[in-house]
Length: 116
Length: 107
Image 1 (cartoon, each protein chain N blue to C red):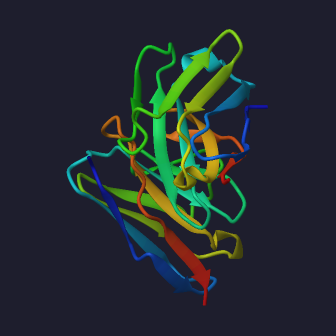
Image 2 (cartoon, one colour):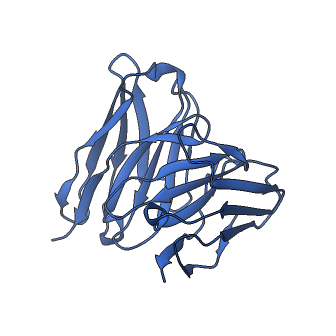
Image 3 (tube, rainbow over the protein chains, first blue to last red):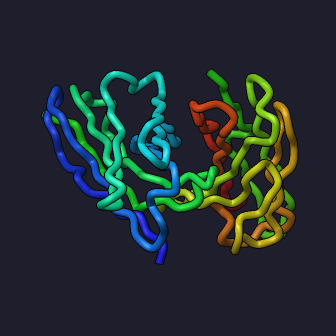
């Protein structure tokens, strides 16, 4: 079935880097743009980044531009998010989602906790 | 950047009620708006896209309308499983902002 599975979350110290992954299955990954969205504990959804199907066009929310890097490997059906200089306010569940163009398929999320 | 403002932020209603949630955009976004439902501990679920098109599998009691800067999500007759948080999202610009959310609670 159509599925997205995130991984790579955990407890990370402030200032460190982290790479999140999103494994896609059940659909032709290479034909869809993909997004990352996060949700801090008890807060709303925050859109982070989008990457085109071929990986050539990307956009970031102003709040994360320069620290977050979205990428994909269409041969491995994998989307990634590299986060650098982690801060306490990066603590959140991170979701990947398929662009249809609305976000029609979401993963279950991976939790990132930034704490010393 | 385009800002989305949902109203109300909290809504208390009963099973069987008709409820409407509004999403206002800071500038015109044509019909490039989607609505999502999120239940505690779960990922968001797409309900409506292109402002008024019902996503496959979503019950017909959900409907969306609007264009430009004002949009509404209507649930015609609330069911117990509809108590959740609802978000709008604009897809007009390449900064796909969400509204702040509307939590629908049981009265």
